[in-house]
Length: 114
Image (tube, rainbow, N blue to C red; front, side, top):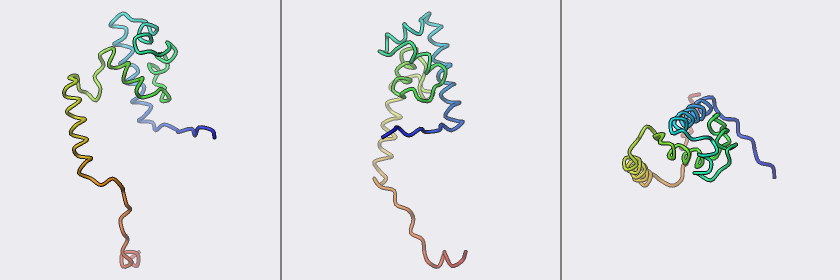
């Protein structure tokens, strides 16, 4: 079965390009080549070039690894402990909601008013 092509939203492309540019600037500040960063995170230099160009098909884990390696803050948080706290807060909130989403029940009277 062929892989389905997902068309990225404009905001998705903007976010990927913005993060890619931040990674590239931080890499340059460190004096690293794309091959240097690639070797540090275990991917090819071509993958680094794609993620820096904002390719939405680059794996999110690869993008995050590159960002962390060059010191680009994720989610606007520079402190890794704060990022862990944010994750825990999200997990706690998710634990409070149900595991399934069910559509709301529609009352027949409500339908008659349309």
